[in-house]
Structures are given as structure tokens and as C-alpha cells.
Amino acid sequence: MFAGPCSSPKPITVEVIGTVKANTDPSEYVSPEWFTFQDIDGLVLTGRGVFDGEGPVMWPLNDCRQIKTDCAPLPSSLKFYKVNNSVVTGITSLNSMQFHFHVHGCSNVSLSKLNITAPGNSPNTDGIHISSSDMIKVFSSVIGTGDDCISIGHSTTNLTVYNITCGPGHGISIGSLGKRPEERTVNGVTVTNCTFVNTTNGARIKTWIGTVAAEVKNVTYEDIIMKNVQNPVVIDQSYGSRLSRAPSTSVWKISDIHFRKIKGTTVSNIAVSLQCSTLNPCEGVEVADIDLGYAGRLNTTFISSCSNAKPIFGGILNPPPC
Image (cartoon, rainbow, N blue to C red; front, side, top):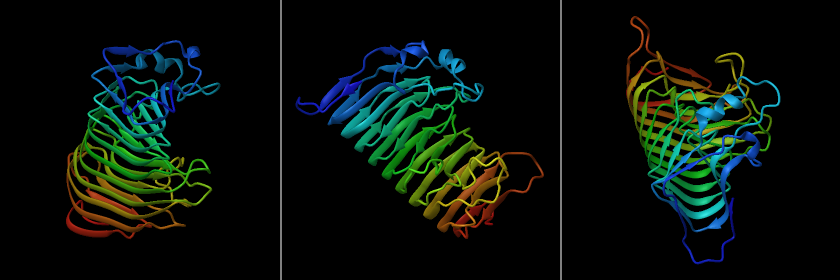
């Protein structure tokens, strides 16, 4: 752990040179992270070094999808907790045991020029998970992993993401949200100039049914390129339900959402899927200038699907509006 507060002059620079390899004995980890940076103002984490999480060795030892009892998550590679006014740049994360980067309780942090790599079937290897943080920027990075390239958790505000290449992975997702009662509103997310390649999802918002009401609002996905993406545009308020596409009674409210200037190809015949809550129908969902080509099975109808959404359509629309 690198723990502050630090009395030395700012910036506090940590330069990574060479390859840092994780210990492959799970019993050696006493915390849910491999490296933690905590209570630091003015951190600069830089260098051309590599954090190698030794995932291919570790994933089979503790795969919670297979082990039904006594399963504890493997540690994330790098966590930033209460880190403010800081920069993370140039780092490579390879084969993380769980998350590659976890940003929690932070403010005014930029992450750029990152190279994040793990196989598409690696479990829970989110590239960058952000939660309970404000004014975070993620840009100019290449992320290919086994879960969300970027996952945006509860209580995140004023997040900016741009110039990201994502794939393989599950896209850039807000959520999942609402599984735990302490989770709060996500407000102010902008994702622009990103490319998704062979991902399972593209621009996605996902909530559980939930027990405590909260919101997702003021979100924009714009100038996005999709290349053979399975589900390019998704709102899913039945996340975690055993019944696929079941009617949602989520207590989460989704509003002021903008999907604009999204083009490319998809292998799904449902390219735009907006499945909102029956209790809290989505409001102010804009779908404009969507130009997607269908690269799936022949003789299949190419559609949009909407439930409790009432989207505002405009510009080019391919697939046709629902």
C-alpha cells in the first residue's frame, strides 16, 4: 500500500519501469487489492512498466462462477482510494486477477495512455471500474478484457471518457446499479469518440430491480464506432433477472440520456434495446443519427426494441425506430 497523506512537495511521482509480477499464492493477499494508493493529493503514476496480475494462473484457483462455496473475489491490480488531483498515464496492466484499475472515492483524476489487456473470457476483469468519484477523465487508451472495458459504478459524477478503443470486452457500461441499498445516483457521464471492436455490448446502462430509489441522469454517448458489436445500444433495467428481457419494476429512474452519432456494424438483429422500468419509465432518452449495418444471419428483421422508454428519435435511424 502507498498511503498518505504525504508531506513531500507535489507532485508525488511513482515511475514504473520493467514488469511487476503478482504473487500466485492467493493466501498472500490480505486485502482485496494487489496495490493500493490511498489518501494522496497530487499523485503521478507513470512509466512504461507493466503490472502482470498472472491471471491465467489465478483465475482457475478462485473462479466464483464455478466455485459455489467459500468463494472470495481475487484482488484487483490497482486501486486508487481518496486520491485527488492526480494523473495516471502510460501504464500497462496485463491479465489482472480481477479489476485492472479501481477508482473509488477520488476527485479530479485523469487516466490516459493506458494499455489494458486480458482474454475475452477472463472472469470479472473490468478494465477500469469507477465509483463514488467526481471529475474523473479517462482518455486515449486501449482496453481489451473479459468484462466491461470501463464500468461506471454508483455515486459517480462528472465523468468524461474519450478516445478509447474497447475490445474484446463488454463495452462501456453504467452499472450494474441497485444491487445494494447503499448505491446512489450517477449524474453527468460523457462518452465520446470511442471505438468498440467485437464486444458483447457497446453503450450500455444496466440496473437491478433495487430496493432504494436512485437515478441515472445526464448521460451522453456520442461519436461512437461499432465494429461487429453484439448489442450496440442498451438500457437494461432487468439486469440480474433470471428471465431474459423480463418486465422491469426497477426503483431506479433513468432520464436525460443521449445516444448520438453511432455508426458501424452489429451481429444482433436488435441493435437498439431500451428496456426501462414499469414503475419508473425512462424520460428524455434521445436516439439520433444511429447508422448501423446488420452483419448477422440473412433473412432476419433488423429492429429497435423499446419498453417503457418513449425515446426521442432524430436524424438517420438504422435500424428503424421502435
